[in-house]
Length: 190
Image 1 (tube, rainbow, N blue to C red):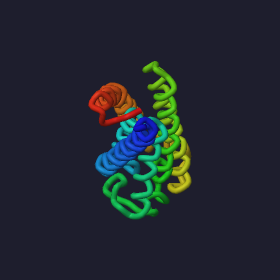
Image 2 (image 1 turned 30 degrees about the horizontal axis):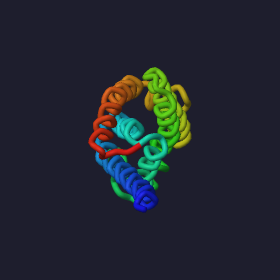
Image 3 (image 1 turned 60 degrees about the vertical axis):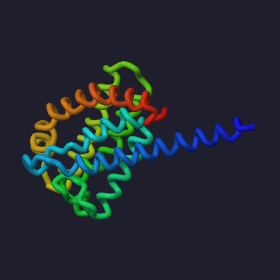
């Protein structure tokens, strides 16, 4: 008689764990993203590192949802964007395209992580997602700064490639280990 009620209770508990994990990763993004290194019109940000970790821990759906909640928090003025800024002005500014570009980055990278077991495919998916983010960001940067593509790439993309590769490598090395430990501890459910 307890079996029929146990299944819905287990599903409810699993949903609560998933939403809690997404909230924790949103909070982590809110902490890491404002920590930036200003090197020009586009700062070095740790936002993508937080997203890469979220994708390993939560999967593409919850990882993307986690970032979307972060984005909404920042849109409403909470200073969670790079340099402790927030609001619509940041999204409409020169780096707004990168902030929006993190959404397709999360989807593409997360799908690669979920659908493939090969580390090479994980890297390819995260790199492709990052490339799409660069495209969104650079297009918007060119529009707002009224700059040609090549100079914009020199300012806003090329200097970031080595660091972004290092962030992907860090997430690939640490993310699966943390996920496995959380699963074993019963703190994360698939």
